[in-house]
Image: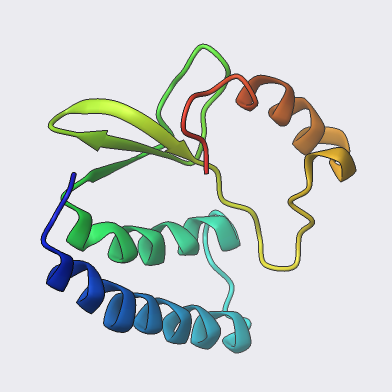
Length: 113
C-alpha cells in the first residue's frame, strides 16, 4: 500500500483539502440522502482513499457485524471503516443504544477507523 512520497504529499495537500471542501458543501446544503448522512460520506471517503491503491467495499460482513466499509489491498480484507453522522459523538464511552451494541462487536475488529 506504500506509494512514493511525492504522491503522498500531493494526496495530503489536494486530496484532503478537496474532501473537506466537498464534505462542508454537502453538510451545509442539508440535502436529504437515501440511506442517511453516512451513505453520502461513503462516496467522499472512497474519493479520499483513491490514491492509496486500496479498494473500499460497502458493508462487508465480519464475525462482529457489518461496518460501513471494508478496506482491501490486493483483494485481501485488511481493515474496516465505520462512518457516523457529522456531530455524532464518536467516543465509545458515550455510545448509547444501537451505537453501543454495534461497538461491542466492532471493538474486536482489526484496523478499525
